[in-house]
Each structure stands twice: as C-alpha cells, then as structure tokens.
Image 1 (cartoon, rainbow, N blue to C red):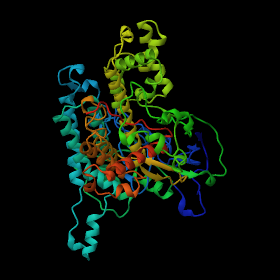
Image 2: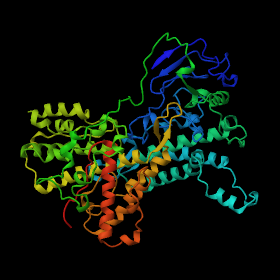
Image 3: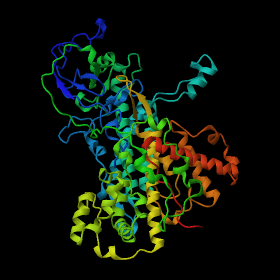
Length: 611
C-alpha cells in the first residue's frame, strides 16, 4: 500500500457538483492506494488510514472467539445499509483515556486467562473441569447490567395492530425478519445473561470457559456500538429516523473512541463525517488521473495477508485411502472409503473457492503418520503425543495462535524429535522450538520423560490414541468447514469480489449447532462416550446425532441434495434401506463439501471398540 499526498484531493471526482466529498477546510491531504480494491482511500476526519478487511481472509477462531481483520470489534469493516452501526463500535480504551465512555469497562476488551479459572479440586490434572472466578463473574455482571439497562431504554414499543390498514400488512410486519441492528439490541442481552448463567452454574473445561467469556465480551462490545448508534448517530446518518431519548448515564463517544468504517459511497462518507464517525472512503483510481506519489510507508495487515493458492489433489493422493493397520480403529460403515469413493476431485465447486496454504494442514497429527511406519517410529510418535497432547489440546480448544494447524511434515518432525535427539535436554530444546517454554503464558505445562520413549505401547492404548486423534481432527475440521460453508457472503461495492463477515450472534449459533453433533463435551472427545454418537452401532444413538448434523448442513450455502433433505424424520426412526441411504447421503455431502473448500480429503470419524 502506498501513502500519497494529492493537493487537489478535495476536488470533485465526477461530473456532478453534488458528488464533492467534504469541504476544502476539513479535507486531509493524505491517503492510501490499495491494490486489492484498485482504489484510493482517504478520510475526511482521521489522520490514520487502516487496511481494509481482506477479501480472502482465512477463518481462524482466536481464544476470544473473534476473527481478527474480519471481526467488527477488531478492525473497521466495509459498511453498508445492513451494518451501519459497525462504524460506531467503540475502540479499546487506553489506560490514560479518562474521557472514553467505556473506560470503566476496559476489562471487556481483555481476555480471561488461566488465573481467572478455578479448578474443582484445586488441581488441573485431578479435576479437568473448572469454574470462572467470582471476581471475574462480578465484573461481567456489572458490564452486562449496564448494557441491559441501556437496551431497555432504547427498545422501541411494539406497533399497535390498529395502525395497519389491512390484517395482511400486520401479519407481514410480525413475520418480517429483524435486521442485524435489531437482533443485536433484542437478543444480545439475553445471550449474554445465558452465558453468565452457564459460567456460574456449570463446571466446564478451561477452553469452554475462555470461549464463553470471549463471546460475552464480543456481544457486549457490539451491543454498546449498536446502542450508541441508535442514541447518538442514527438521526444524522439516517435522516428521518426516529430520535430516541438519550439513555441515562451514557455519553456521546468522541471521534477517537469509535472504530469507524470503509465505504465506497461519497454520500455516506459525507453523512458519517458530519455525524462525527471515522470514515474511510474508497474511490476508483480512475477518478484521480493526475496523482503524484510523494512518499511510501509500509502497513501491517491483521492477520498478515497470505496469497491464496490452489492445492494439487495429487499431494494428498494417499490420504484418500482408508486407514489400515493394527493401530487403525474400525471404520464406521457409512464412512468406509468415503474419501476414495464419494469425492469428485474435479467438481466445479472445488475450482471456485479460493484456498490458502494452511488449508493443507491438520489441527492435530495426521493419523496416517502412525500407520505406514516402523514399529519404533510408531511407538515414539505415540509416546510423544501422550506427553505433548494435553497442552496442544488445551491451546487448540482456546484457539490460540501457537496451536496453529501443521503440515504432515511438521507433525512428523515434532513427534519424531526423540528419534533425532539423544538426551532429554536436547528433546526439551527441540520441543520448545515448536511449543515454547513450559509452562506457557497461561500456566499450562508439559513434562518430557525420555525414558518413556523406549517403553512398548499396548495395542488397546494405541487404538485409543489414534481414535482420539481422528476424532479431534474431525471435530475441528467440521467446525472450520461450518464457518466457511455457513458464513454470510457479501459483495464488495468497490471490486465486486466476495468476502465474508460474521457477527458474534451468528458465530455463537453456529458453534452451538456443531456441539450438538457430539455426545460429549466439545471439543475434547471422551473414550467412554466413543460409541454414543455418529459412530455408534445402534441406529437410535447414531440417528440422534445425525439429525443434528443434517440440521447443521441446512445452514450451509450449498446444503445436501433434495432427496436427503426431503425425508421426514419419522421415516428414519428405525434402521432400514432408506435410513442407510440417507446416512450415506449426509456423509457424501460432508466429504465433498470439505474437499471443495480445503482441497484435501477430510479426516473421518472412527469407532473405538465394538459394543
């Protein structure tokens, strides 16, 4: 991106005199050239111009359940008529900014840490489940109470039936889907209260606690932005809208306290500027023929931008084949050879989606690594996973960046460190290069015992470890696929390119639907419940979770074919030829959709033991 100065930037960019952006007195003589938008970005009321959200940003959930550059509470977004309030989302208060209207609630921008988690038995190893500390719960209560009281004051009274001339008009009004702003104001308080109630009454695993806190915080910040928009800015941005009474105890945020937004409309830029909202106008370069670049500066994207690439399916040819070997858990009948038989590697959709290099990687070790190797390598890999698996699962469940997906080669190098290092100190040194020091910033530790790597592993234990790895990969892959397949697709006004955006309510709804597909705590599988979900040999147990998988797929942009979706649940209560074909249809749609989006075969769930 180039930073440039143009003396005549305030001049009319079209033949119509009505298209002037702002007056000469207020114009900023700096801007930015952005290659992806092929446009020039200026701001009438801000000295800094951030990078626009990338069109092909990968979806990787963080520990606070936010999405980085495409998250409206993290970075300015493209603004349209459906999400105008994104521009008034408050920015994180600085410690010394006493004028910030939310300085009292600065902790809502701070993630909960391991120090805020209280384990049931006082020990992580013994209990494994925990609750959020009373102090942190009190702070969440205080913030949510403030937001709920404000939302009650801004809630518009229901429209009386007699105001409609026809009964059909009133029914249309009742069934009309609320827009995003109305959903945040209406549903946000309830969802936050439900989240706090869950934290106070249930013992959960640490990852679930951190995710729930992050979701409450995201909802709270979005709700505050929506309330500020309704109370202080909507009458200026949307002329003719109803002006509500200012909420008691709330103050109008200053320009520097707002996130702002990008727009391609000069009219909207003028409205936002007059309303006191940071705005970044993207205009085609063709409107500025006489430009001169005087200086350049480098910019950093959040996250760092990676050029997409199309993955060659031949790189994963052996991954399409079924797992075989003494350590391979039994396959589920309907999933047997699904990648090899049911995936069309030349489907039209697989050529349409943009992919990233990280799409070829695995959240957890590729199970094929444990099969086509020598006995010594297999035992070493399994022992290594036993010693580092707990910390990796913890980080992955919190969606921490240091638990990023790794390629098969990286997993082989990590698990095979004891084969190359001769002493325990050397093993520790190489492992720290991958995982960092122990304990890490969250207080989670791992201990490497070199003497264990020479011990044999019983076949039953090996089967359980490989089953767990398959199940973990399947669960995280399903969650990642659902985020992509169900994300709201928007169209950039500047370039016509497609990009994706998801609000907190949407993300909560989707992950909840994914959780319902499994019989135990998500995301960590429990071997005792291995055969109670879609891997069960009993149709009634299997059907219960397959129904949730089908319901999950209903929300995808490309749902299963009509023959699968049209079958009534009553016709599937008992196992029959119809139920078998229905199950195989769901499996085929899953493996094909995963391949279309990621360019590689999915890791399939397995059975652990016959019941």
